[in-house]
Length: 433
Image (tube, rainbow, N blue to C red; front, side, top):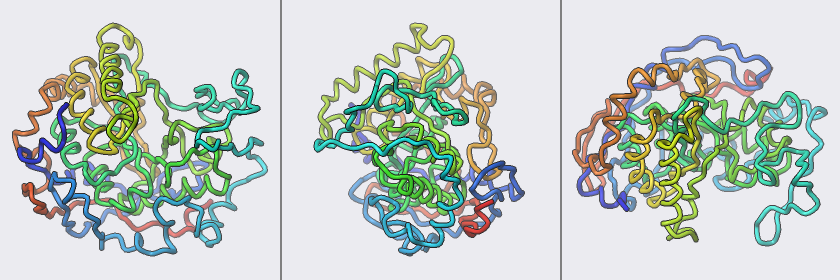
């Protein structure tokens, strides 16, 4: 299996491309967002100060903690929760949070109980009718079409034929440089589900994700089973993840993915109040649980990848596509991606992010126009030909990004200036209607 560590000595790391952010930053006009409780005004276009970011591919170097002076509010305990604690802790009594929470008409909330965990940490299904599944609880039945009117169905598959919906959970990750470089070189775009706590820890990673043209979405603040959280905790998990993504990248996501897929109609309804719709999947690689950090032999994950790749050639997805659950957690999961992306792009006509395959041209509150599926198909032949090469081709050391590149395997840095959407968050009063 090709390991990211093996790329350290041979790969020139490119800086994040500013092209996508530059085009997005051109909009500064009001955006219609009926019944939204989130900002409806696009931020102004500004020049972000130069950012010094490591381009080393050595995790021991690039995963050293850093501060981001461009984002001072990240270090203000009154502005955000602490990383990796339930987002409501320490924030639920603030005027900011209370304004958001009280703007929701809780009399219309579904009467669905908060779920419990067993002592083992697994969800407790005792007493729940999993056959009838009255609450459309995905963990109990994989239900993705809500039983309560007015809640949109989960997105679970790309509707376009022979299309692989490329998604990566749990970013941004400090050791992602080689992985993002590869995606950039092969002109592959994915939906990146970012954890709020990770954005706090690695804000430059979130900046790069948007600048490289990926579709950025919410993966909650602390990555807990969402059905086990109270309504107050749910609002905080959604709100502060959206806020930190907005603050660091300038865009406010309209889509989210529940950790572990754990969602029911109560959680969906709360997410809807914060202008979020759920994206799930119809194929799962279980890459997060691969050895050595997990319990599954890597051969199991490899077998799943091979099975889904075969589906691209045997007619399984001749009439519609898939959305595949994969992760950018660590070296193991990203190495799976580098190994199998050439095979995926060879087996499927289209490999792209969920917003593109769903023709969601406005995946954020702001007036940021995302690429359409038609625009993808006009260049698909060229992209597939480039992406189908062996992953080791990244060793060519050609920097295809539009940033200025400075390569080193010993922790050298590169400075790049981007035209980014404003990172100033709109005052909370203007966030409510």
